Image (cartoon, rainbow, N blue to C red; front, side, top):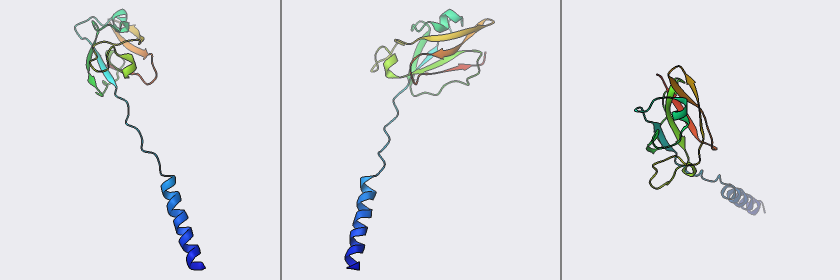
Length: 122
């Protein structure tokens, strides 16, 4: 009887070990990186304008900048905030807020859950 009880207990433990296995984490969504065009003046109005005249697509999943709040550098957005996720050229449906400090502006916020921004030294 003990022999069967031990076998049943082992089977139950093994079953619960497989039944409650942790789910694999899903791959993190791609982030599309746009960089402020250094050929443009770093004014508050320009930095806040999401047009590709000011923000140039650089690639997916690139790192941000030094994050020194002196002038705009990069924004990282999900596929929901680009014109075409397969061939992005422009930000879409996103609002960028900025603050002017002297002759340059830096990003202070970006709309959209999970979207990020970083600034750089002047």
